[in-house]
Image (cartoon, rainbow, N blue to C red; front, side, top):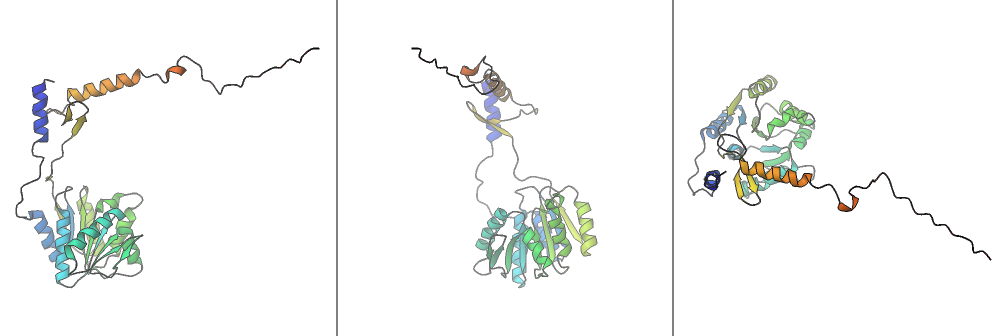
Length: 269
């Protein structure tokens, strides 16, 4: 590929990547719709790409519960994610309100107004009869389809009390109508489905070339750019010329070497 053409592709690939200028925050329409659906007492299923702002909905819904003196729980599938959300919500709501953490390893302020927990722990508490949350946030709802852990999300939905509202978040659910219909049949409550297709942060496939630096992986027509193809062809040819350590080439290595046997002659007198 000509140098000028490659340079133009690289400039186009890197364009727009920067820290945005500070500006007043304005919620998107889907965020406002989800918050209103929860305020109306509806279970709400939000499917939006990563980075679209699903957490904002959860934070605003929790804030509304706190205004009403009600409790909320935020569940996540991983302890690492639970710990991260715990730190995030503490910065947001403390010291005015208490934020707790409930995982298999850590138990902090478990009777707080806002509790962050792994989904398994929340499910276990439901089996023990503990249900005092007005808002239940089920993050990463697509775990419903997980063959080993999906039952945890199913049981969490089935056992959550009808007086609580469910806020279910995911970036990768495709059968939302089927899921919503099942939840409505279980909980006898309307489920509002909110889907966002547009990705706010564009995904670009790139390649870090050892000589030419960062470049796009594909041309505008969707083909792998020639520089990347040549790089891998060159790598394959270099690899194929390596036949193993030089000292072993051409020698049979059928098994361990036998120790040499020494023979000694008796001295004759």
